[in-house]
Image (cartoon, rainbow, N blue to C red; front, side, top):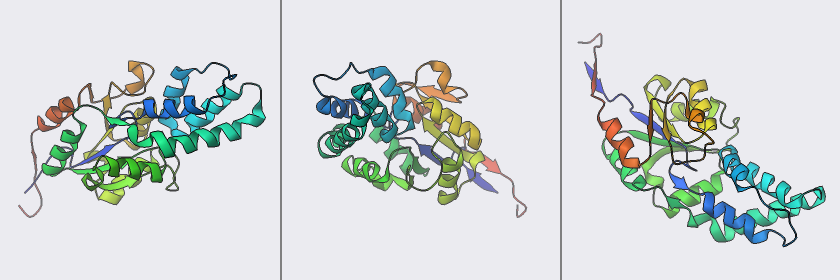
Length: 232
């Protein structure tokens, strides 16, 4: 007989799920915007963040350059450099996130990260908030697999931590995350305070939450299961 929790492996997205990174990214965009640049569309940029920091900066460069296509590479490079040098670590955790991670790890859950962010900035953020030790594996955009919403990075993450998709939970905040979980056939829990356009973007979700403590309580409310084995 073997006992186990319903979600021994819990995988988290980063931007919009654990950290509110949007203000730090927008600050970098505004810092390098030419005075004569067209107006930004922050809403479109915020939604693009679920595809990764690079795609969001590329869209911002396109907005700032307007019809001057030749200016885009320089703008992209400038905002990327300013972000890494000045605003990256100003991203703030959502309320209760540190306690959520510490509590889940202490309860015996295996935790991992699956993000469309590059590895260098991901590890910098995790180290800055002293979270790296919570995670058994961190999968990033530059790890050689298609980005989310493809299910491959999530499945690869679960393989690395040694848990099947049927006993895992993926926690995210966007349509990209919801589609990734669906493609991988992994249960999805959605943070409503993240970077999605409308509530329907988070479908299908087995749970939605506003505060990290709500997710903690929901996971804890699932009873431990008993699996009968041939040795019993």
